[in-house]
Length: 276
Image 1 (cartoon, rainbow, N blue to C red):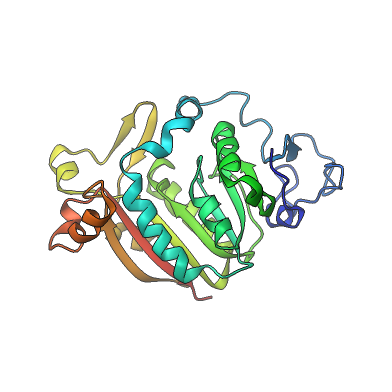
Image 2: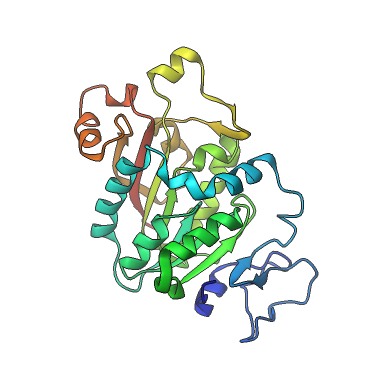
């Protein structure tokens, strides 16, 4: 299991008391003595110890699929675009919040770029695979099991914010908006962000497949225009595009520049910064 970076704990608020998390060298929680508070367990931070006691159908699917998740054919174009973004945005020593990190490989990419990372997901098997993929680099990361809709962070704590390929699974528009508002508060003024999500393309419009449940995983597709309406004040989009028209990275880059690409793309991306 990874050795977690103790300086990263204080960027997360305790589930019991809401204060910045603090632990002794022995792993004893110091911020409060309330029952049900966040704990360190087997090298991971368990934000809400009650989360796994009654796993949802989606949690069971994510746990079961963790080992094969990143072999999905949709990932080569996504990883290609993300690698390009990180090369121009991550600086050594950046503290980056990697939300919905899954089994990787985003966290490893951040660590290889010399950033420190707080990697959050509700699937412990996914976190374990992610930590294993990171290897010795995991010493600069904190792996956190948490519900993305309930975890809270210290305001203006992170230099970068990764939100890749999960916004569609959080719930309805209000839930998505509340999540974005909370997450952007954790970003420092001037800090960068990367946000990707299910795009509503022509096929989904024709089949009325904008939301539903598939394989026990709920989803709600959006569009670039709609997500813009959900961004809080002070957040500026510097670049946006669609992707995942093709499963090969080079071909997808070409296809995504074609006229009406948004009518075909499965994913959309917004890149930008927090101004204030």
